[in-house]
Length: 312
Image (cartoon, rainbow, N blue to C red; front, side):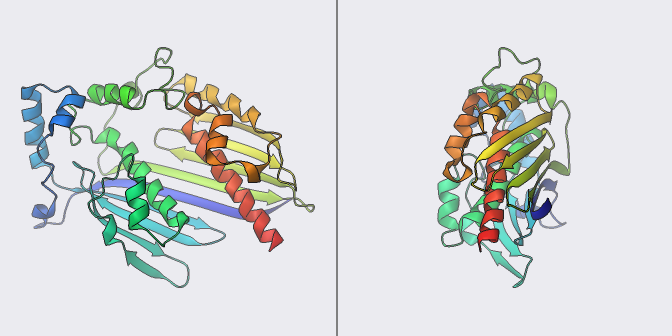
């Protein structure tokens, strides 16, 4: 068995102060808490006034980056984002493989780097292909995860208020948020600390191995500031999954780790006929783990790349 494909992602999210003299560049349009934020953060007038003052004094940027390095190419995406509004201030992507180039994406400026920004991102990146959109989306997912450590900037009086907001906003979206009556700790209990500077890191790695008759074995690992998991899949030459296993090493609650049982639903299915929605359905949808779903889908895509290289 030989290694035929490797694919690696690294996403980092930082909060950086502006250079001296550039404080005024920080976006102040969102410095005052909106009524929408006040309602969802359950703020009274005094709390809102206190947070308004905090946010008006806050200077700095979120700098987020995803680097992809694989057998096929090396490329990265970068976003500079306002920590209060989460609006994109600058966006660029860089091709690190020949021909080396840095390309700014002015059409992304002003887009909120948050849920439901997909259509706007797709429009801003029109003509640049799905992989680049996926890299920018990965960067935005990192920013959303880093919000845990920016709850005051985002208009929440406390980590507990932020956690309760997510319990409503993300209800029934994954095994944790579908079983809040059974979890042993809330999100703010799990992430019961604050970070400055580096706010979030995520590593994803996929290695595909092929036998002489070109059946495949793929090892996928996922590790970020809150979660860690590994998955292994066996796939025959006809692209039928014959084996699947994995484990969650770190997660917000022990109930999350139960989602690994859904991997047993994969054997017997043909990889080439599985859409992302079908993979999610097999792996439990809202009662599964979104990170297992994403990791399995990317692992199958990696095997597809290996098969295409062999066929070509």
